[in-house]
Amino acid sequence: MSATMIKEFRLPDLGEGLTESEIVSWKVGVGDTVTLNQVIAEVETAKAVVELPSPFAGVITALHEQPGTVVEVGKPIVSFEVPDDAGASPTGAAPAEGEAPKRQPNLVGYGAVVESSGRPVRRQRTFAAPVAAPVETNPVETTPAETKPVETTHPEPQAFERPRSTPPVRKLAKDLGVELAAVPGTGAHGLITREDVRNFVGGGDVPAAARHLSAVSETAVPAGLTAAQGEREVRTPIKGVRKYTAAAMVASAFTAPHATEFLTVDVTPTMDLLAKLKASRAFQDHKLTPLTLVAKAVLIALRRNPSLNSRWDEANQEIVQFNYVNLGIAAATPRGLTVPNIKDADTLSLPELSEALTDLTGTARAGKTAPAELADGTISITNIGVFGIDAGTPILNPGEAAILAVGAVRKMPWEFQDEVALRQVMTLSLSFDHRLVDGEQGSRFLADVGAILADPGMVLTMV
Image 1 (cartoon, rainbow, N blue to C red):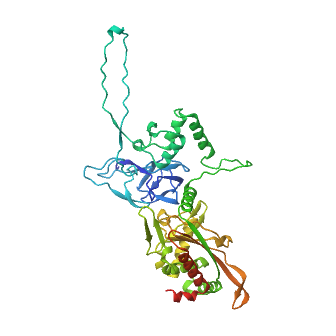
Image 2 (image 1 turned 90 degrees about the vertical axis):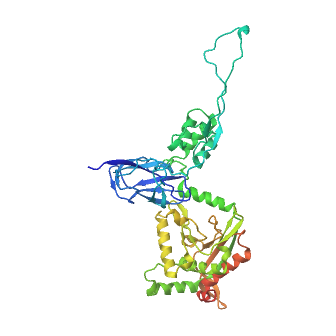
Image 3 (image 1 turned 90 degrees about the horizontal axis):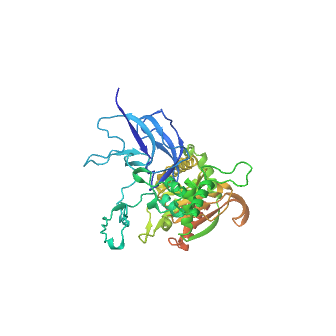
């Protein structure tokens, strides 16, 4: 019988330096035998719900966190019983001197070994520890005549490490008026967790006002809905995708100076073309929608108006113009708004673009979008027409120069060949970052998109 050992799997960084994730559900239970890369859990980051693959083949011995729990990166979430291979080191053991840390596959590529804390090594910041006043033990009463000067020795200042915690924990401590240096950390390697701060507050070591604030935060926003049926209010915790989206939209609205322009277009020729394409044998296996043709029009118009495919780099005081297009498509999901993007969309043919759109929207609505698909977008489209809305003022996706809102296609009386006719009409709403895009540039781009949709044959004059 071969020997076995216990391996812990710590929550990895699921992309872009995220510090925590929520356990949505476990796909395995204690005692289950799993294979390498088998999906063992669903976790929700600040951007998406992600399937977590197993880094080991073995038997589940413990699930350390329950569904609905927010777990910090680096904290153990599941333990495995695995064969004790020759040369394998126990969980958490440091590599031999001169040996580089092993890398193993995980959800987002090849990252650090899961046995590590999951955090980058930080340079320790040391401070001089305060010197306590000497305390005389077992004092002896003396008369003034017997009083002698007492020699005191001051110990050398000792260095101590800056308290380790994550940004959310530091914010919680700040809100509660707690000095982190006074809080004992129970996490890995002395990490201070949310529970440590809350327990410290509850222990009476902080002002009453702070304890009251902690109590409110615990009772007002619990893990689920707090209002029973028949009550006048229902409270839902702000977390996950909704929390990230809210922060991103606020940052965008108050950082980039938005300008919005509108253009109403007779898209009857485009709708006629759409009907012909759907009837074509070449597109029988592809799902074509008005959004597909609008996306293609946007990609063509960007070639003539590249300023709308750029980013403002505040740190380096530079304008970054992209020579590729990662086309974002806003998708409404049960967990909130996400904007996954199609990488290098400008290189795709119309059938490839339609297939990419179908895959993107289906994955987003199922809540399975990977973090990598939400990053590095360059320009976005939001289809408000599916809700019967004609126009709006969309907020820019952070880091992008423009976003186009596509309104509903409606049959309306319209001037056509000097007569009034019933035509299919659509309104386009373009918001852009006025630091990057001048009014003339935004107007020309919007006019180009409109010209293509009003007469698809205009493409021949633009490419």
